[in-house]
Image 1 (tube, helix red, strand yellow):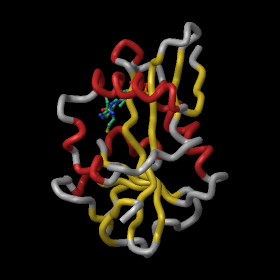
Image 2 (image 1 turned 90 degrees about the vertical axis):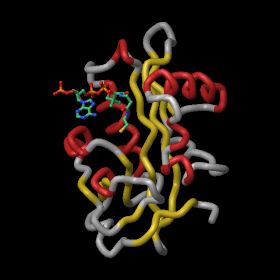
Image 3 (image 1 turned 120 degrees about the horizontal axis):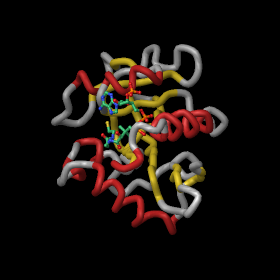
Image 4 (image 1 turned 180 degrees about the horizontal axis):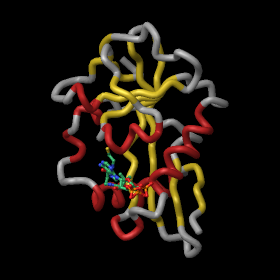
Length: 162
Ligand SMILES: CC(C)(COP(=O)(O)OP(=O)(O)OC[C@H]1O[C@@H](n2cnc3c(N)ncnc32)[C@H](O)[C@@H]1OP(=O)(O)O)[C@@H](O)C(=O)NCCC(=O)NCCS
């Protein structure tokens, strides 16, 4: 029903419009956006979901970040159009894009989000990883893409180009 394909530059403004629809106004004031400023999203992992008519139904983007000497993926934003929610598209976007992350050489992924939603995908609280303020530490979640990939990873999350 939906085709999930890597985002291309032609998708950019359509995805921005979808995010504007799905998130509260001022989304770009969130601290996670400071880690995205001036850094390209991860090509090949960021995906769009289109229906049979080519209408954009959902999207997920990833950015690279540093934590101490380690690299990680920052998952998000992920959004599904309000008329398409509850059909499993959010799950498909998250799981299919993460399946592609390991072959690209990524070992760990983090995000800032609702634990009750992301727990089902294997995300748990990252106790020792600090996002730029203001961020509720309870919402800083991570998942290992390879065994014990978060072990010993601690400190402030930094922009890729800093
Ligand atoms: C979060 C979002 C991407 C999920 O997309 P979706 O296609 O509806 O997700 P799925 O169909 O795979 O899963 C739906 C399930 O997730 C649950 N869910 C959705 N958002 C949730 C949340 N914030 N907390 C807890 N559960 C949530 C639904 O209740 C539903 O539960 P059920 O399976 O028990 O019925 C979508 O709701 C969305 O775009 N929300 C607005 C933007 C947003 O909040 N993005 C995430 C940032 S943290």
